[in-house]
Length: 85
Image 1 (cartoon, rainbow, N blue to C red):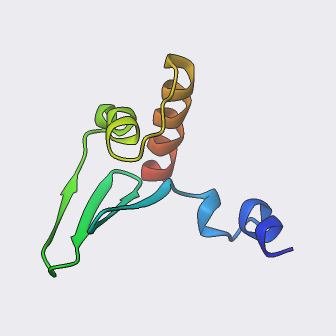
Image 2: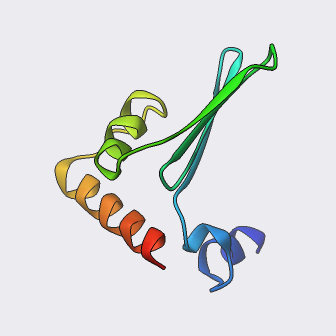
């Protein structure tokens, strides 16, 4: 039931922005629309804003999510909508 709410309810945060997270080794990566953050177990980290055209590359290289050209176009269009809202 909770999963259904998170993916369908109009007020769910997952319906109005791109959110991806992955932990690899001693680092946790998070992507929130075009904001990429890295937190390391030693307490260091960084945050940077991506250009919209970088999102597909970061999804592939950092999060191991491979998109074809059409999927990448759709993701970039949705993120553009999220940012304009």
